[in-house]
Image (cartoon, rainbow, N blue to C red; front, side, top):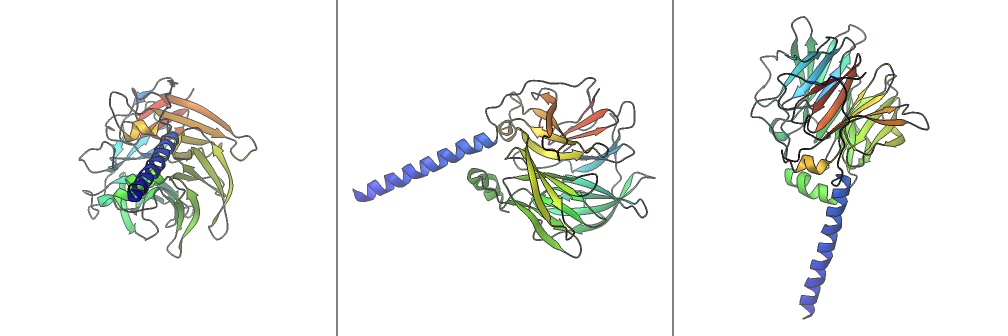
Length: 357
């Protein structure tokens, strides 16, 4: 009898634990949230982007680099390999992207691009493209040089390191150096996809990489996601998608990071783009992650774009710029402004270009 009582108590305790964890996960996923459409004028879908536009970064001349074709566990995807395309945002109607020519010595079949970043060398204006790649669902960083004359990429090197084990996004700070986010603690797909979400612990981190040094520079995130840098290069911004906020971190001379503040957003922040003139942060967000994780085309995941102005002031201004219930664009992951236009990318769906005015 005593043994049965013990078993019953254990079962009850486990049931209570898992019940509380599921409630907590639904809360972090904003599972009960429904979004009201808040559309921008003159929105047009970008052509030939049917399988995602997960990350976008824009050069000063308006050339937007887009990673497409990401294959991520749990999300719809295509059998086609990933690619990098560019879209000229300086055009009056920027809806026709151009696929970049890839080098013949690069493994295109396993190319699975995620977060991207660009570094322009001030010494010779060389343009370096950093791409997070997940061949066979592993994590590595591909370094390319962009040749604008023929819109091609030259592959320079593949970067692998034990601290770069579950990389989501990247921001370049030199020709071979960067900060990157690890969005999970475990490497096993089961532990990442099942155990870690249920436990929901702040175990993920930010890593600094250079050829001379690799180190963890910030940790304590529930799901470190988007990362970017301030125009003056003094601050790093990190999105914690499951904590619904953006962290502001100050860079030190040794490339370590010191926490300054967090800004609540009220949505699940994916990637961060920074306006080089105003310093405003533009966030691609998921209003309800449960709809994203349990994809149903009849009840699609929505999209949301949020802007943060004056993030370093005592009262940053957080504004919803765009929202859609998923019937125009599903699963927004990034939003990049340029020249009065806004380019909105997604994890696995399409891309949308809208007028901001």
